[in-house]
Length: 467
Image (cartoon, rainbow, N blue to C red; front, top):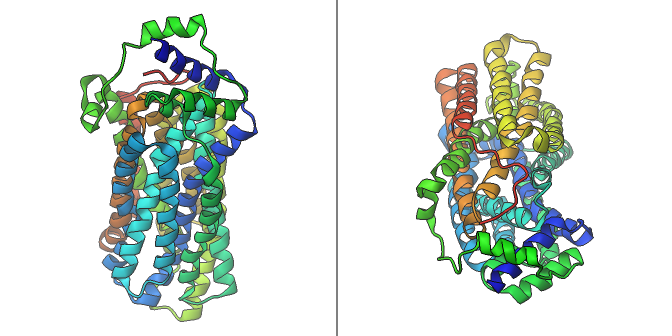
């Protein structure tokens, strides 16, 4: 019981101590991996048409080249979460970036679609791994009272990465308007990854995870390093340990996620994320191509080279503008997540996504550009106001510490399965049925996300992380 009281003291200090510089640094470094995901997502959307032209890919090969990273994110999220619950968050945060850097360099030197797909699959595994790792670290290190704000703030690095990727892609394509510029685009992700990897060398382990492993002395030292306050057991901690702790707990596994007590949480954290990522990745990875297609521009390999590059540059600039509203959505979420709650924002966001995509589907190629851009603006704002932020936040709150990274990994993997569906579905469905009907189907998926969220709702706002 004394050990349980010490664990409560550690959690109390982490929840109540003011947030100072060291915790902010750990928060930013944990979140930065999500920024790499956003950067890679958008840089690939710019590089995609160039890869098709340079390597002479067919529609299904285009899906393979672009979607390989998304496919790799599924095992990446599943395995990293489980391993992080076994060996710790800190070690996996470092291993993950090494894989990202190595695979990014290899991707830039790929010689055909299959070598590119292999290297991008490995890079995607590194990107997928960041979701449970960063979420677990942020939720366990930052205070519980404003956890929603801290989690959304961490996930907003994805939007910052997208905007940075848009700017870098636009600049590289303007500076070097060649089909082979895609290699520089993929290689550019190595620079921020190396910087983050070096800075991550000094971050401590999650004190909550250490305490759960029985490493109480180290957990108390790391808590003091993060907060400036040494955990001291009080009578309140002892009383809470008598209420909430019943001695040593067995190690949890994947099957514990399907226990009746957690089944609702599993549905809430997996199905909406799956549906959301169909839209986010299906639209996000092909935003320049979609804008070009809806505006009537034919940006394909049958165009003259100069016209093709010019069309890609123009569509990239438009996409970069609409991506700014991804940041707006995250800001709105940070302002509202503790007031309105996670579930309300997730439902509202799904409805807004369906409206924005529905507008694009109905207007199609006959609409003016300002309406098309408006549809993308609504979609980008609402996806980050709601489900893109809340699906990342909820798994970190509904699962206990011993199962948090595993549960978050399963939820993230479900999302990446949706991303695979969106990535492979959109080019093939567009070729078979047309762009507007395809976008309309994705709008329906977003509406379904709102329904599932309402039926499986669990509001977690303001609750402390207790097991």
